[in-house]
Length: 127
Image 1 (spheres, helix red, strand yellow):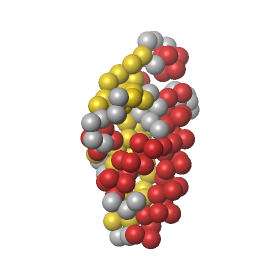
Image 2 (cartoon, helix red, strand yellow):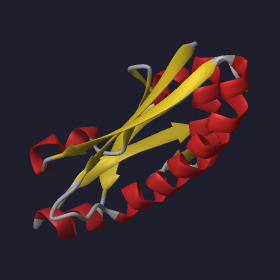
Image 3 (tube, helix red, strand yellow):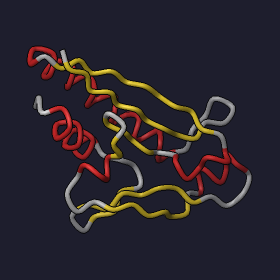
Image 4 (cartoon, helix red, strand yellow):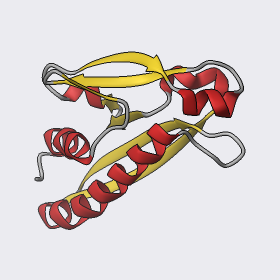
């Protein structure tokens, strides 16, 4: 059986994360549940790992890896940038800039389920 390992890295402080990451988590939960049903019968086991980051690691926050490959490396034409994240600023007590992903002329602060699924399917080849 093959394994699709999905790792999500995000800032967490005092048990809380920012709004962007909270929205991304909801997307991940939707997609992982669906992938488990779709990919299991095709010989692919889906494993999920969450990596909680410290404030000093903010540049990696809201990063999703598929078998160690960043989402933006899997999606054709995707790129990464950073924009100000007031929610992370509230958590860290200082202005903060977080990752965004741009695909097809749209920039996403929170990663939508459709992009998570597209990247997972490209890597796992099971959906």
